Image 1 (spheres, rainbow, N blue to C red):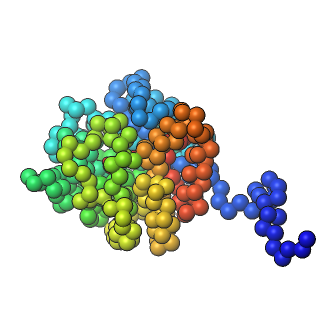
Image 2 (image 1 turned 30 degrees about the vertical axis):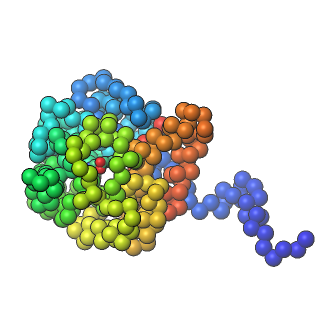
Image 3 (image 1 turned 180 degrees about the vertical axis):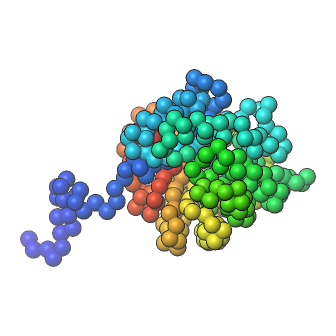
Length: 321
Ligand code: PBG
């Protein structure tokens, strides 16, 4: 039969399909997040994230080196802070010999060519679990928080971090951090801004239980974006770009592919996606129940991020690479 177009011709064999593939997923697209424990030789299970463990830095270095050999270029670190080191102001975040700066030094010595990304936000260090410093009425005070965040970024830079990643969603933090870094001579430390970070108590929940950082009161709606709003993401991203961000991030992942796509169209900066803890856990829960195979679900999700425009993807699925 004569048909003017037979689109299936472009899918007729593996060879043709491979030739015409629009996006290619590679390990170098992945940023692997790690939950950091103090001490040595320590490994603790995270019940809500099957297959992911909290690790001390020596074990993270071993895992990271394996991933690096497979092509992963960057990891990011989140600290499991002992409750005895938490306080109202998150003072531990600025401790030059704290968990994160020490781990950065160790990793840059052990695996120098692997990029280390450190999170800038106070929630793993505060008794209340908020990303900044609350006023008496509980509202997180923007400008007081900036002072702490600057100091936190500086202590990570002094330890030799490659990229600082503010995830706190305070106004003006990219500029504050850029100025503080440049003033101390850290002009080569990059800023990856979690610019479009949506409030997602459900999907961030496994992360928060791993770090014991669930807010002790209220929620994060006065600083993280509302899932109903797309336009605010443009404001956040263009502001962070103007303040000197080197890269932007959209988070969570799959529910915000539309935001990722739109932001990618509106900026020339590299844009990343964060396939967050709850998204990982959903897949693993279905996998463990035998509903579907995790590897296939992760490959499809990561490919979707690439198709939507992601230049890099934070994902806990690195054990499936
Ligand atoms: C907080 C922060 C969160 C995540 C990264 N940084 C959680 C939150 O905002 O409460 C979540 C990451 C994940 O769920 O994988 N600064």
